[in-house]
Image (cartoon, rainbow, N blue to C red; front, top):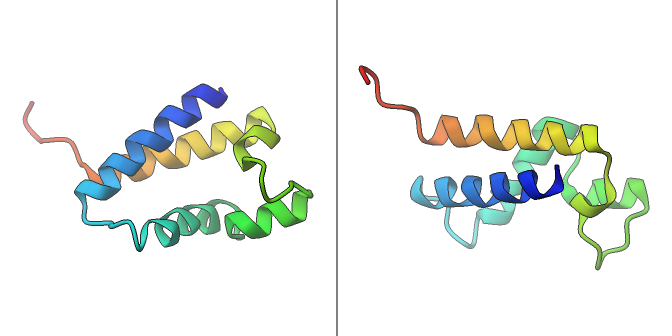
Amino acid sequence: MRLKVSESCKQLGAAAQQSGVNSETFGIFIDAGYLGLHRHTLQELKGRKGIPEQEDYLDNISREELSAIDFKNTMTEGSLNPPLRGW
């Protein structure tokens, strides 16, 4: 599941960049996703869970949380790149 989330994060990043999210605002974009899903920023979540700063949040969470993040990434990517109608 962790590898699947890594891939959905990459795809979301590419879709965000295509939609105009630049490197200066990418962190804000990512935090907005965590705020929408968990009502906390990534840093707040790490603090609440006792995850050290140098460790990756995604390496320290449950399969259920990884699934929720994958779903959020997929839905957000779809919103940024809606499918063409009529295909």
